[in-house]
Length: 139
Figure 1 (cartoon, rainbow, N blue to C red):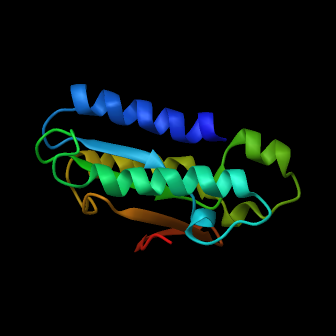
Figure 2 (tube, rainbow, N blue to C red):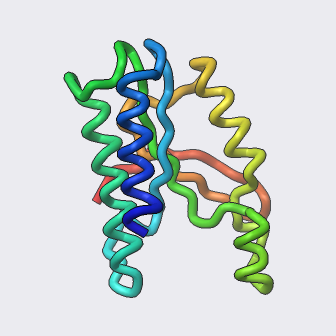
């Protein structure tokens, strides 16, 4: 989990520091589960909490990101992907966040429309097929 979450986020941050345009957006993937202790999945919680911390740090002055750039973390519960459906075929898919919603949201934010403030942890909550966004505080 550390490699697939923290390393990739750190690599993306390094690339953003050198190649993101002024006013650009860096979006990383955190997790709602990491907003509280995760005794049954410590490695997962640790890795995602590290991503949350990285987002907060990158939002600060002198982080190395370009002028007026923003960084946010998306905190889904479960994304509606083929791999997740195969792994959990009996789950309630109505509570999973559709990838189309995520794509539309990121597209909107890249144009500056409704973009959360830099450093935000954005919770994606899907109930009965309807997804909402809310800004949450880290642990």
